[in-house]
Amino acid sequence: MSAEPRHSQGRVLFTLAALQFVSVVDFMIVMPLGPQLLAALAIDAREFSWVASAYTLAAGLAGFVAAPFLDRVGRKAAYLTLSFGLLVATAACGLATSYPLLLAARCAAGAFGGVHGGLSLAMVADLFPDQRRGRATAALMLAFAVASVVGVPIGIVLGTRFGWQVPFLALAALGLPLVGMAAWTIPPLARHAGDGARHPVTQLVDTLTIPAHRRAFALIAMLMFGAFAVIPYISTAFVANVGVTEAQLPVIFIAGGLLTLVCTPLVGRLVDRYGPLRVFRWVVPLSAAMILVMTHLPAVGLAGAAPVTAVLMATNAGRMVTAMSLITASIEPRRRGGFMSANASVQHIASGLGTMCGGLIVHGGPGEPLRHFGTVGILAATTTLASLWLASRVRPSTEWAAQDSNL
Image (spheres, rainbow, N blue to C red):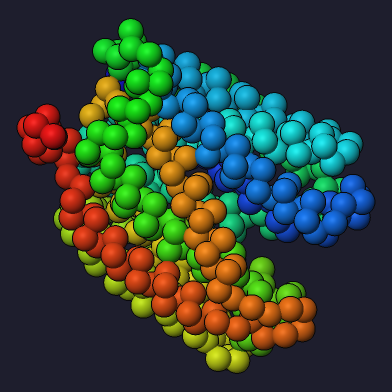
């Protein structure tokens, strides 16, 4: 990196994490604003489900479309373009006056936001050496915890007091100076050329089929499937089965976010000291155990649900930090931008499949217990444990290069 003060690694990492916070809150804020959106736009639950899923679907598609091109342009230029596009789309959500306009704005936000997140991780891998990459990845992942503890609650308050549009407009206003800061602090990263003359479709096929990439895609898909088979139904299960009231739900997730804030940097340090694979093997069994505990909770109320959820969220963040540290080291730098874009698509698709699979298993209507949630927990824990074998197949790019060249 440049020796100039404005290119210090601390400033760069803060800027990346701050813009990641904006992106995460933009993604998360729609669900708690649901009741207001239904009333203000005169839509039903089915139509709202499209608003909620439009971001994920667009992000999944955009990641594959962008993958062949991200390694042909400079990382900094691509990152600034995606950041600005995300803010414009977020502002468009706040300015939408009808259901079709909001739906279109959410698609645009997902298209920019999904690729933006993957490119952020690629830049961390480019900027930080192996011995510091764990802490840097953990710092970027903290955006999710801060969003849970600070961003979403503030967004809910703003939406309740001033209208559902205000959280989106506030995020866009917050992000604009951060884009300017990114233009100033991020160094002019080298372009990872070499495949520029190849047809984009050919390059995308290579990105999806290179053996090292397939191993990494399989690992992240397994983790996301296991997590999202359970996560979307936690609130419903707590209210229906565990004796938690709707008013108490924010307390549970704030507790989880706070513990994640504490544990994620610790995991990053452990990764740098012991290596990502070793730490992954410590964290994943604990994560699987907490999935089983949480999905089989009896009526223990807030006192029992809060600590269980907090540990589950912390271990989930820990396994993602270790997995992404492992994965980014396994990808050749010249292919990293395209891979991370496609990887973001794989994450979104696997998350959607996990949610859909969980929804096919659980049953329960308004005022009824949520049945078979424990079965979903067994499925999620099993897939989580299966990732241990997949992780053992993900190795540094130099270690697999000779073997993969013969395949």
